Image (cartoon, rainbow, N blue to C red):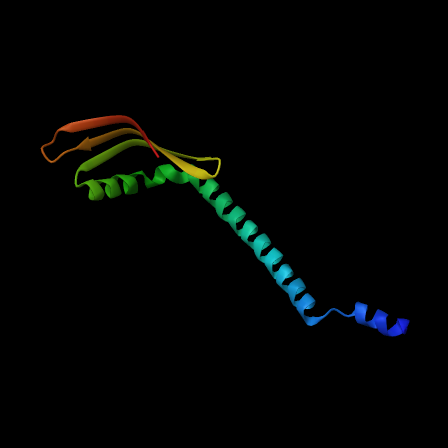
Length: 109
């Protein structure tokens, strides 16, 4: 029995084992990059929520276009709850084509 020939065989990794190691490293690297990317996106989104009131007119015009009625929003608020954003619209007034006013004190999604 030759001890030197057996030790050489154990020291070198076979091509399939080496390939599995590379795939594992690639998978771990991809997961880490994805987690960092999501953390950056969530961080930026949360910081931009403090400026949500600047988009009040955009929300009003978008809601008016989608409903075909005039929509006024008193106040827009946004927060980040657990894993998803939450939007709150206060004092929403909808005017139908005949001019009839319908008020909603609180609307959120």
